[in-house]
Length: 379
Image (cartoon, rainbow, N blue to C red; front, top):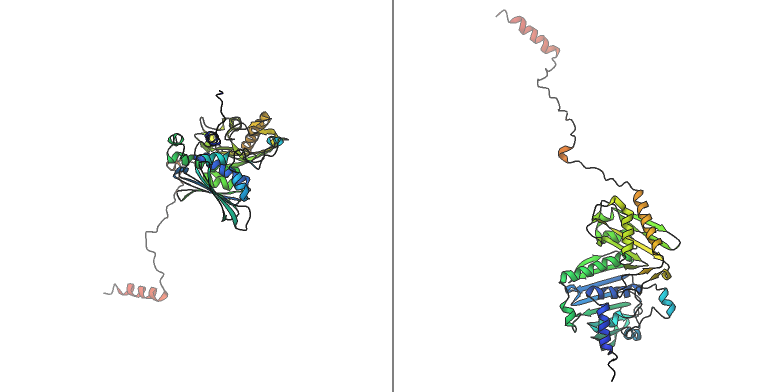
């Protein structure tokens, strides 16, 4: 008798969840990216207890029809890939159709969605991969997905979760990256009812940087732009005096997708050359636009790494533009001398008259004085 068996669909979904859903930030990433692909201009994220108790993502995107609402939770169900050729020109953040079924396999999910402004939508509930309810409901245009009790049926995964603050840090960091990658979308992140991130979504990248890193950082950013036949680069880089102790302040975005790319970071640092102190790193947000046929995004389970067709040309562009941008600036900060060593201005003391000026005498008083002087010897 053969030893090879076909895995049950439920077990297969849980195995896939191990690759896609590593921690609460993975759920936030997949749900927010779906909202971006739906054309949303506003995305609100609310989490509780670091995302282990609740992750709720609300958007004003295109929404889903009642039929699509259920189909979206099937494995490999997607509206973004129709043929083999589409794999070589991916323009969306998601495309595999694994996120929703993987999330639903290890949590309790409730989806409320509507495709238009008629107010008529669909409510779909699935727990641990099992459908619990599908009903009509009133809903505004867009999608509202709530993920509760993450890893409730996989205690081994839950045991290896870090502290609430650690998980919250991962969620916050990824919302930062997405807000910098899409400054035209208004993002809001709340944890236990407290607002942590809020961007305007007016399309101004510098204002998004100010909302995330602060106005003092935004004032020290320099715009960078460059273009070749294959690539278009724009974004902001910090002046050399504004540095961080790690690479966490560097965000690289390719066709609207935040990625981690070591060669691009090295090209950025080569552009700074000797202007950075040892073991210090700049703050930078680099956006690169290119033809999707020049990039392969299907090389990493979480789609955080990509492969370029013409990588050396892109690295040369980044290094050259960074070097030229810094070369046009006056990078020597104004010297500020301590107050004790500053040359003090000479103080001229006001001169005061120490005698009382005599009052002018009239003719009558002068004549009286002479008469008194003449009469004095007679006495």
